[in-house]
Structures are given as structure tokens and as C-alpha cells.
Image 1: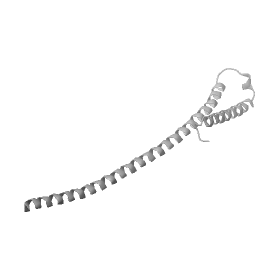
Image 2: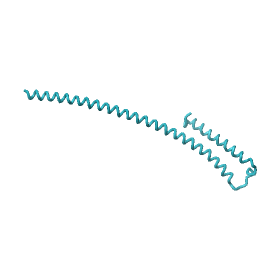
Image 3: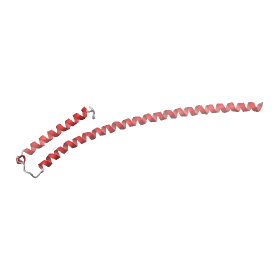
Image 4: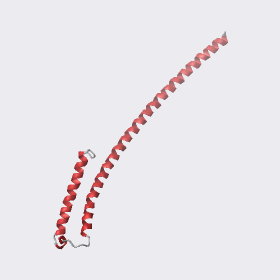
Length: 126
């Protein structure tokens, strides 16, 4: 009789001990799950920030490419004036000044037109 009572008490103590361990493990699991969610949220936030910076870099690259295109227009004009053929425009001393002014104004207009188009297509912030 005593051995069966002792065995029952041991089993009850073991069950209580296992329940206590289960509560501790469950608490640890909840903390780890909460920590994992926090890490996932932080990772998502960092990815959003990286995407924002990437978009800003793409917009800046778009502006630089457009500015490079406009500056290339000056290269074309210089190339035309560097040719070795006779043009009556070359004889006038003030003609080159007017060519530079017209080319500069045309470049600024083209650049502004590109920027307006980019804003119209919502490729750049307003």
C-alpha cells in the first residue's frame, strides 16, 4: 500500500514539476515569438528606408543623365564649329557669342522640359 501511495505521490510531484517546466517553456516561447515579430518589423522598416533611398538615388541619376544630355548639346555645337569647312557665319566676330547664347537657352529649355515631363509622369516628387 505504502509503495503505491509513494508512487502516486512521486507521479503527482513529477506532473507538477513538468507543468512548471511547461509554463516556463511556454513563457520563453512567447518571448521568442514576440522577439521574432519585433525583428521582422525592424527588418521591414529598414527595407522601406532602403527603398526610399534607392528611389531618391534613381531620381538623382535621372536628373544627372538629363543634365549630361543637355551638356552634350554644347559638344555637338563645338564639333560643328570645329569642322574644317567654310560657313559664312564663321566670318562674323559676334556670331559665336550668339551661338553660345542660343545654345545655352535651348539647353535650359530642354532641361526644364525634361524636368516637367518627369514630374508629369510622376517620376520625380512634386
